[in-house]
Image (cartoon, rainbow, N blue to C red; front, side):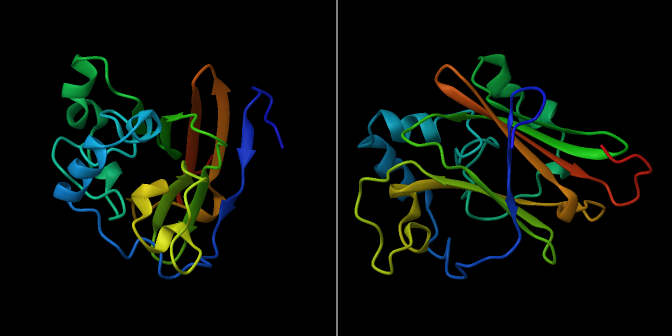
Length: 192
């Protein structure tokens, strides 16, 4: 399905079929070692300013751990990245919605997925960048050393977020895809 602006509307999944995913934490030391031997695809996905970079928030934070994004002002948290032109993500809120906008590097087939845990008020954005590498022992790339196969960013949603009625859109331009996620607020009078 395509929106009027030419963006592809993504399905937002609510049923988690992989309960063991993201169970292997990505430590700072492992990440630095991985990135030092990485090629162009890995660096495009995990570079500074990317939503998937463990250093996006100014210090190391494992992207597979849920982060309370909307508790922070984007202008403050991303100031240093914006000052050097490296920021590729933004978030905001209005009286009716929470909004997340991010560049996604195009590496291979763009297979970004958005999953929402309605009960736990958590959203995750993930995708596989390395489809040629043999997957983990159980066949699911997300259950082992996931960073060798793909990317993830897990976000805690605010208490007044309505994740069941969220919408996600993907549009492409040049070497990047642009992801926009709109999450309505429960008590808002106007739905988007």
